[in-house]
Length: 166
Image (cartoon, rainbow, N blue to C red):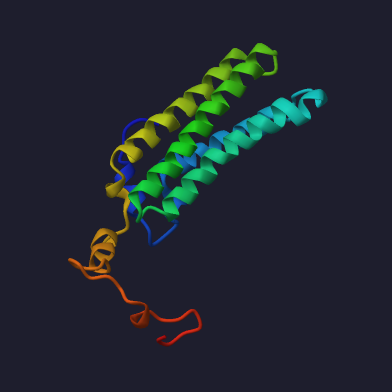
């Protein structure tokens, strides 16, 4: 899935949001392939390898979605995407175990492993320049709402928890 622009799809917030990101689509498709492939794992692996590989692969897509919702805060966005990258790496380790245990063919292992690596590369691009993925005007609106100079909001000027002024 090399090539193309992550940017154009990441900026499309009017329809689909995170579901339109190529990295999310790849992560979701990979998790579903892992689910289907792990259905044939032995029953004794149900609470170990099977559940771990399913959990980590699904967590990649979930962390991408969570990060996308926090994209107006570059540090939080990057942190969630770093979590997604770590989960993709963990999924690769579980794929290695599944191959070595004879549960996956070398071809399936290679295909799924390559998908995890591509997800990692795509996430790295996003982590490296999180401002490209911020909603339009997010940086300006955050800056405009910040106190100016030595200003600090006083307690009396803030609305109370139940509404109105204190």
